[in-house]
Length: 115
Length: 113
Image 1 (cartoon, rainbow over the protein chains, first blue to last red):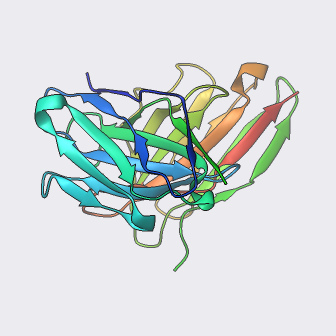
Image 2: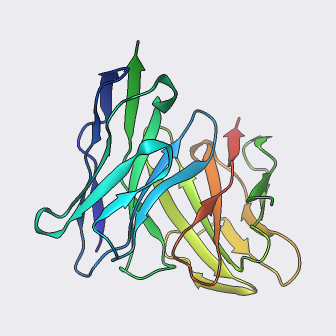
Protein backbone atom coordinates (compact mmCIF):
# COMPACT_ATOMS: atom_id res chain seq x y z
CA UNK A 1 0.00 0.00 0.00
CA UNK A 2 1.10 3.51 -0.71
CA UNK A 3 2.03 5.82 2.15
CA UNK A 4 3.43 9.30 2.64
CA UNK A 5 5.67 10.60 5.41
CA UNK A 6 6.20 14.29 5.99
CA UNK A 7 9.19 14.90 8.22
CA UNK A 8 8.56 17.75 10.62
CA UNK A 9 5.06 18.71 11.58
CA UNK A 10 6.15 22.31 12.00
CA UNK A 11 8.80 24.32 10.13
CA UNK A 12 9.72 27.90 10.95
CA UNK A 13 11.72 30.17 8.65
CA UNK A 14 12.50 33.85 8.39
CA UNK A 15 11.14 35.93 5.57
CA UNK A 16 13.53 35.63 2.62
CA UNK A 17 14.98 32.33 3.78
CA UNK A 18 14.90 29.03 1.94
CA UNK A 19 11.83 26.88 2.47
CA UNK A 20 12.33 23.10 2.51
CA UNK A 21 9.43 20.79 3.33
CA UNK A 22 10.23 17.10 3.26
CA UNK A 23 8.13 14.31 1.84
CA UNK A 24 8.98 10.65 1.43
CA UNK A 25 6.65 8.16 -0.15
CA UNK A 26 6.29 4.45 -0.25
CA UNK A 27 5.01 3.07 -3.50
CA UNK A 28 5.31 -0.24 -5.27
CA UNK A 29 4.60 1.38 -8.62
CA UNK A 30 5.65 4.67 -10.24
CA UNK A 31 3.61 7.21 -8.32
CA UNK A 32 1.66 10.34 -9.05
CA UNK A 33 2.76 12.88 -6.41
CA UNK A 34 1.24 16.16 -5.33
CA UNK A 35 1.79 19.05 -2.99
CA UNK A 36 -1.22 20.97 -1.72
CA UNK A 37 -1.42 24.07 0.46
CA UNK A 38 -4.22 24.81 2.92
CA UNK A 39 -4.83 28.20 4.47
CA UNK A 40 -6.85 28.39 7.70
CA UNK A 41 -10.48 27.38 7.28
CA UNK A 42 -10.08 26.92 3.55
CA UNK A 43 -9.86 24.05 1.12
CA UNK A 44 -6.74 22.64 -0.47
CA UNK A 45 -5.04 24.34 -3.37
CA UNK A 46 -2.75 22.40 -5.68
CA UNK A 47 0.80 23.74 -5.70
CA UNK A 48 2.31 21.24 -8.11
CA UNK A 49 2.15 17.65 -9.33
CA UNK A 50 4.49 14.98 -10.61
CA UNK A 51 3.04 12.64 -13.22
CA UNK A 52 6.14 10.84 -14.54
CA UNK A 53 7.33 13.61 -16.82
CA UNK A 54 10.17 15.95 -15.77
CA UNK A 55 11.62 15.14 -12.35
CA UNK A 56 11.90 18.82 -11.40
CA UNK A 57 8.40 20.21 -11.18
CA UNK A 58 7.63 23.90 -10.96
CA UNK A 59 4.44 25.04 -9.34
CA UNK A 60 2.62 28.18 -8.37
CA UNK A 61 3.88 30.92 -6.05
CA UNK A 62 7.54 30.11 -6.73
CA UNK A 63 7.45 26.59 -5.31
CA UNK A 64 9.12 23.61 -6.91
CA UNK A 65 9.74 19.97 -6.05
CA UNK A 66 12.13 17.33 -7.27
CA UNK A 67 11.17 13.70 -7.68
CA UNK A 68 14.05 11.45 -6.60
CA UNK A 69 13.23 7.82 -7.19
CA UNK A 70 16.41 6.53 -5.52
CA UNK A 71 15.48 8.38 -2.32
CA UNK A 72 11.71 7.94 -2.70
CA UNK A 73 11.44 11.65 -1.98
CA UNK A 74 9.49 14.60 -3.32
CA UNK A 75 10.66 17.54 -1.22
CA UNK A 76 9.09 20.97 -1.70
CA UNK A 77 11.31 24.04 -1.90
CA UNK A 78 11.07 27.77 -2.37
CA UNK A 79 14.19 29.95 -2.56
CA UNK A 80 12.80 32.88 -0.60
CA UNK A 81 9.94 32.67 1.87
CA UNK A 82 7.23 35.28 1.99
CA UNK A 83 4.90 36.01 4.86
CA UNK A 84 1.98 34.90 2.73
CA UNK A 85 3.49 31.38 2.50
CA UNK A 86 2.50 30.67 6.10
CA UNK A 87 0.03 27.80 5.82
CA UNK A 88 -0.24 24.04 6.11
CA UNK A 89 1.28 21.93 3.37
CA UNK A 90 0.30 18.42 2.43
CA UNK A 91 2.15 15.90 0.31
CA UNK A 92 -0.01 13.26 -1.36
CA UNK A 93 0.34 10.18 -3.54
CA UNK A 94 -2.27 8.37 -5.56
CA UNK A 95 -3.40 5.17 -3.91
CA UNK A 96 -2.58 2.78 -6.68
CA UNK A 97 -0.08 4.74 -8.71
CA UNK A 98 -2.75 5.45 -11.27
CA UNK A 99 -4.43 8.68 -12.12
CA UNK A 100 -7.87 9.10 -10.71
CA UNK A 101 -7.55 6.95 -7.65
CA UNK A 102 -7.81 8.13 -4.06
CA UNK A 103 -5.13 10.40 -2.70
CA UNK A 104 -3.12 9.28 0.32
CA UNK A 105 -2.03 12.32 2.30
CA UNK A 106 0.79 12.92 4.71
CA UNK A 107 -0.06 14.40 8.08
CA UNK A 108 0.92 17.86 6.94
CA UNK A 109 3.60 20.41 7.77
CA UNK A 110 2.72 23.80 9.18
CA UNK A 111 5.00 26.50 7.82
CA UNK A 112 5.52 29.64 9.90
CA UNK A 113 7.27 32.67 8.43
CA UNK A 114 8.64 35.38 10.69
CA UNK A 115 9.68 38.87 9.71
CA UNK B 1 -15.26 29.50 -14.03
CA UNK B 2 -16.64 28.25 -10.75
CA UNK B 3 -14.61 25.75 -8.80
CA UNK B 4 -15.90 23.03 -6.54
CA UNK B 5 -18.79 24.27 -4.43
CA UNK B 6 -19.72 22.80 -1.09
CA UNK B 7 -22.63 23.64 1.13
CA UNK B 8 -23.25 24.31 3.80
CA UNK B 9 -19.86 25.63 4.86
CA UNK B 10 -20.72 25.07 8.51
CA UNK B 11 -23.22 22.60 9.87
CA UNK B 12 -24.21 22.02 13.47
CA UNK B 13 -26.13 18.91 14.45
CA UNK B 14 -27.14 17.31 17.73
CA UNK B 15 -26.28 13.70 18.40
CA UNK B 16 -28.67 11.38 16.60
CA UNK B 17 -29.61 13.81 13.84
CA UNK B 18 -28.78 13.42 10.17
CA UNK B 19 -26.20 15.50 8.32
CA UNK B 20 -26.33 16.07 4.57
CA UNK B 21 -23.31 17.57 2.87
CA UNK B 22 -23.52 18.71 -0.73
CA UNK B 23 -20.84 19.02 -3.37
CA UNK B 24 -21.11 20.50 -6.84
CA UNK B 25 -18.02 19.61 -8.89
CA UNK B 26 -16.26 21.79 -11.38
CA UNK B 27 -18.48 22.15 -14.44
CA UNK B 28 -17.85 19.21 -16.75
CA UNK B 29 -16.19 17.04 -14.12
CA UNK B 30 -17.76 13.65 -13.59
CA UNK B 31 -15.46 12.26 -10.88
CA UNK B 32 -16.04 13.19 -7.25
CA UNK B 33 -14.04 12.27 -4.15
CA UNK B 34 -14.89 12.83 -0.49
CA UNK B 35 -12.25 13.23 2.23
CA UNK B 36 -12.48 13.81 5.96
CA UNK B 37 -10.08 15.86 8.04
CA UNK B 38 -10.23 15.13 11.74
CA UNK B 39 -8.55 17.41 14.28
CA UNK B 40 -4.81 16.73 14.53
CA UNK B 41 -4.99 14.29 11.62
CA UNK B 42 -4.41 14.56 7.93
CA UNK B 43 -6.99 14.06 5.27
CA UNK B 44 -8.43 10.60 4.88
CA UNK B 45 -10.10 9.32 1.75
CA UNK B 46 -13.69 8.22 2.15
CA UNK B 47 -15.31 7.52 -1.21
CA UNK B 48 -14.88 8.00 -4.96
CA UNK B 49 -17.90 8.33 -7.21
CA UNK B 50 -18.57 8.76 -10.85
CA UNK B 51 -21.96 9.81 -12.15
CA UNK B 52 -24.49 7.35 -10.67
CA UNK B 53 -21.77 4.91 -9.60
CA UNK B 54 -19.68 4.32 -6.51
CA UNK B 55 -16.20 3.40 -7.73
CA UNK B 56 -14.33 3.02 -4.44
CA UNK B 57 -15.84 3.23 -0.96
CA UNK B 58 -12.98 1.61 0.89
CA UNK B 59 -12.60 4.58 3.22
CA UNK B 60 -16.23 4.87 4.24
CA UNK B 61 -17.26 3.78 7.72
CA UNK B 62 -19.40 0.67 7.42
CA UNK B 63 -22.40 2.14 9.18
CA UNK B 64 -24.30 5.43 9.10
CA UNK B 65 -22.37 6.89 6.15
CA UNK B 66 -23.52 6.88 2.53
CA UNK B 67 -22.76 8.83 -0.61
CA UNK B 68 -24.35 9.37 -3.95
CA UNK B 69 -23.67 11.28 -7.15
CA UNK B 70 -26.85 11.31 -9.21
CA UNK B 71 -27.10 11.96 -12.91
CA UNK B 72 -28.44 15.40 -12.17
CA UNK B 73 -27.52 17.51 -9.19
CA UNK B 74 -24.76 17.57 -6.62
CA UNK B 75 -23.02 14.73 -4.89
CA UNK B 76 -24.31 14.16 -1.37
CA UNK B 77 -22.56 12.69 1.62
CA UNK B 78 -25.10 11.59 4.21
CA UNK B 79 -24.32 10.80 7.82
CA UNK B 80 -27.15 9.28 9.81
CA UNK B 81 -27.43 9.39 13.61
CA UNK B 82 -24.39 11.58 14.00
CA UNK B 83 -22.08 11.17 16.98
CA UNK B 84 -19.54 13.59 18.42
CA UNK B 85 -16.71 11.70 16.71
CA UNK B 86 -18.15 12.72 13.34
CA UNK B 87 -17.17 16.32 14.02
CA UNK B 88 -14.65 17.15 11.30
CA UNK B 89 -14.08 19.03 8.09
CA UNK B 90 -15.39 17.18 5.06
CA UNK B 91 -13.84 18.03 1.72
CA UNK B 92 -15.05 17.22 -1.72
CA UNK B 93 -12.79 17.12 -4.76
CA UNK B 94 -13.51 16.65 -8.43
CA UNK B 95 -11.54 15.73 -11.51
CA UNK B 96 -12.11 15.69 -15.22
CA UNK B 97 -11.57 12.97 -17.78
CA UNK B 98 -7.79 12.92 -17.41
CA UNK B 99 -8.18 12.42 -13.66
CA UNK B 100 -4.60 13.54 -13.07
CA UNK B 101 -5.54 16.34 -10.71
CA UNK B 102 -8.17 16.77 -8.02
CA UNK B 103 -9.69 20.18 -7.37
CA UNK B 104 -10.85 20.69 -3.81
CA UNK B 105 -13.81 22.58 -2.47
CA UNK B 106 -13.72 24.82 0.62
CA UNK B 107 -15.09 22.08 2.85
CA UNK B 108 -18.01 21.65 5.21
CA UNK B 109 -17.20 21.88 8.88
CA UNK B 110 -19.51 19.63 10.82
CA UNK B 111 -19.93 20.12 14.54
CA UNK B 112 -21.91 17.57 16.53
CA UNK B 113 -23.16 18.79 19.89
